[in-house]
Length: 308
Image 1 (tube, rainbow, N blue to C red):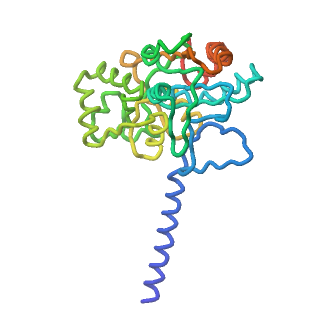
Image 2 (cartoon, rainbow, N blue to C red):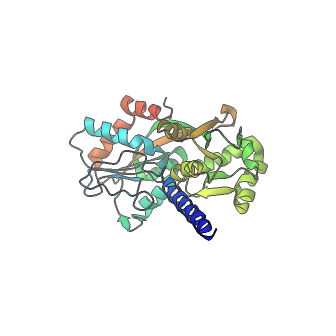
Image 3 (tube, rainbow, N blue to C red):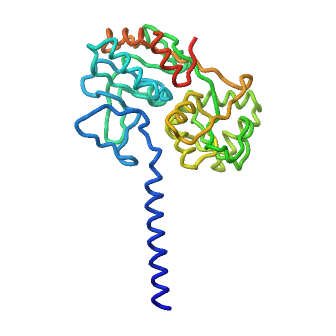
């Protein structure tokens, strides 16, 4: 009986440690980068350890630097490849896809640190929502509108909590991943939608009461955090731009969209500003021209954006 007991215990130990190992691997199975990284002599992206998905391309002596509002990350591969094909003399491009408020602070302060990396590049082109561009209008010599977006609710495949509408987010049993309006332009848009649907009561419920009890999680970089929280089971619903649900489904991740009716929705306008003091003025002008081209518009449509 003693031998049998130890044998059973040993088997239990093996099963337990194996399950822990699988869970540890599963923890990072959805990790970005979700784009295709550039080719290199050494590939050293390690999920959960070394991974910087919102910095792109050539950081040394770039011939063009573009700061994109973060939720356009899925378009970057196609946009930069298309632009380089049209202008082959511009080979080295560096781009960032961080929250627009963070990028604005980077422009104002002149630097950004991620981990041990300090970046001091000045952008040639900055893209963001219409209101953010308006706040910084004095920095730009040219401003162009190039795309639009609307809001959707991202839920896990099967929608286990049965989320049907924006007003459902007041329910304390539903965990919400919510972009922080402090630096995320979408956060302010979603706040406007809450007020549109349920007045101050809904806004207070989601943005104050549920933040206090922990059932609303405020993100720092929603286009990465919100999908991951849904995929890993840490949140039940995330208000996002429609393009983000389109992309997660496109790459085979188990999420679904709950549509927000037009009368409750918000339409966002994406604008690009060419910096007056762009360090690479010729490349800046060429990229602004490309961003409003039919080719670029097709790329944005492919990933769920709208264009006129």
